[in-house]
Image (tube, rainbow, N blue to C red; front, side):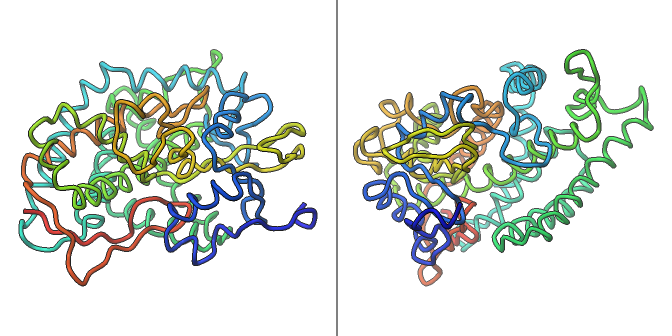
Length: 384
């Protein structure tokens, strides 16, 4: 297929990686449906992305040869798994987990040395994302260190595009999950009544999930949560460092935090993209997409589309909320959105209780994460 098209851009070019947001802004206005050998077809506009999200018959989520529960499934297979998952993110579940989440955030933030430079990523965002996910799933503290190392290895393998390394990293994570399942089976009725044990008891179409299905489900939950929560916290801290008046307003009115968080993450995406597969030949933005083609939905561009949001950098939470694709849309809208929103809101509430101002560190510029990751690799800041 690569021989049939002229490359419109290179997503991995240094000029793109230097500032992904601005590069995507430019592409959205010059070549909104673009071909590259790396991503095949990339969609930059909000309307085109919505076309795909609202038509799961033409645009399939089955983009990998590997089992992916339920992210990489289409109806009717997708539907019963979603029904199993969604109750775990119900309001009562969030209310139940909130105190534990708040204690974790408060404890972590209380260790900050105010007035001294810190790397927000290594000090706050990575530890919080890792610990809160383990707490939610009921995983032991002894997993914190190996999972932290696993996140680093996974990031390096993905960034390098090393499929062999990515396969080894995935197998390592699957080993952790299988061990957790086996521990609970051996414990029998004495197994902890946590989310992981409860999922093991669930039935899909009247049948218990296989270990392969459980491993895939738990991998998708965990990998997505670790990456996006960590990226989100770094983005929020960076934004507030550049907008001290907003920090002051949110500190005085923390009830405005949920909308503000979603709006900041609309402008600066924690999750850059998602994939689909065309099931038939179709036309998008004047381009003919052949059957079988891979399509990249670029959230980091669609959520900044001037045709939808006007000035993409204008902070306007109430006006932009209905069109914000932070958690996707359609039948594959992120089921874990309530958990992510609660965790981010609690973390930022606790941060603003202890911090009056956030400054950049002179002479220590931040390092942005590279595609496909949003946020930062390193973010030196000073909290006062």
